[in-house]
Image 1 (cartoon, rainbow, N blue to C red):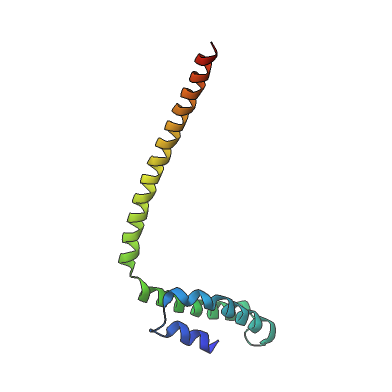
Image 2: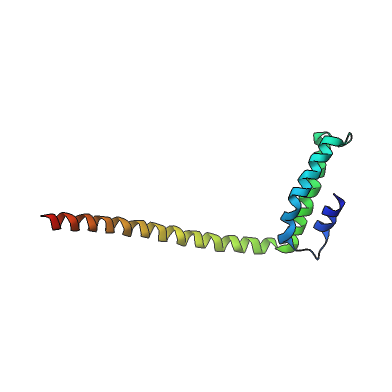
Length: 110
């Protein structure tokens, strides 16, 4: 567990590789729950999990500031609006094309 915390707290480590720690951390928590007579209570594990979450949040803050995240949210929302408009336009054109094809076949058979 100590190595995982040192990895999270090391400023030289890349945030994008922290997901590699999640399985070992969860396995360690499970082992603590199964074998420790002092930490085998929900309140004690909550404190431990809170410390882990705080370390991950701290590492995430080093990676990207809140300002950067909110600016990215604006960009993503803009792309989503454009996607929504293009999807609506595509469906409209597809419907028109289907009507055109149906009319073409109806006219050609008469």
